[in-house]
Amino acid sequence: MAELKYKRILLKLSGEALSGSNGGFGINVDEVESVAARIKEVRDLGVEVAVVIGAGNLWRGKQGLERGMDRATADYMGMLATVMNAMSLMDALERQGVFTRVMSAIEMRAIAEPYIRRRAIRHMEKGRVVIFGAGTGNPYFSTDTAAALRATEIDADVVIKATKVDGVYDSDPKKNPTAVKFDRLSYIQVLNMRLQVMDSTAITLCMENDLPILVLNLWDSNALFGALRGEAVGTLVSGNDT
Image (tube, rainbow, N blue to C red; front, side, top):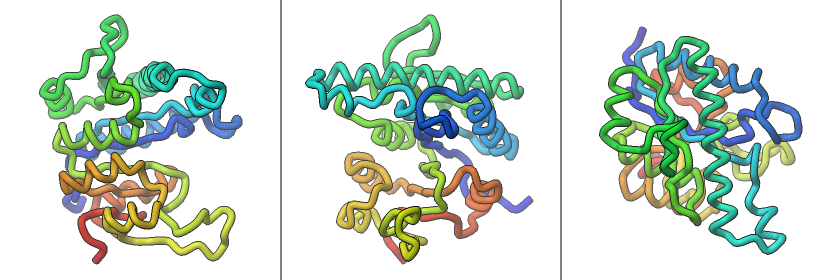
């Protein structure tokens, strides 16, 4: 097999990725097992894998805020929901023979290890998939920002933003059949064009640390493998657009 372009990746999943087609809420066991199988395939190639999962399938803080809920309370609830998603993915991976560790930014020793950077790196070096739960451990920060932060801390080669479309477009391709797909973008272009790649804090953090972001369709069986081999897959966000 050709040499891999990326040896250590951080995979950013939305919470909805685990919910399947049942309206975007809840945890669909079949969908979790499908995601776990895709991660196992990558791990089996010798790639070191870390994962950050959102919480949108279990809790959407915006709804609470619209009713006057305290922002910090809503964010902490979201962090707890990410740990539930992390545990479901851990279980699916372990049942497929993949050693996995859940590390939480909020201490809950009965179900997850506390996040320690050097320990996380050591787990990955031993071939374990590390799932980071509870975001950054602080309110007012999204799981996008958590993904950028953890990827920077563990010296990941790339953040792979898993979506159900094949890259970044100038408008919603499901609503606009003439939407234009970008093959490459700079961080500044993403910020200036207000493209929905990741939130601005996450983009800025990646820009300051020269950490590329690759947006691809995880459910395309060839996309992730192609990206790991260095093929032009999805949309690459990096320091320049050439």
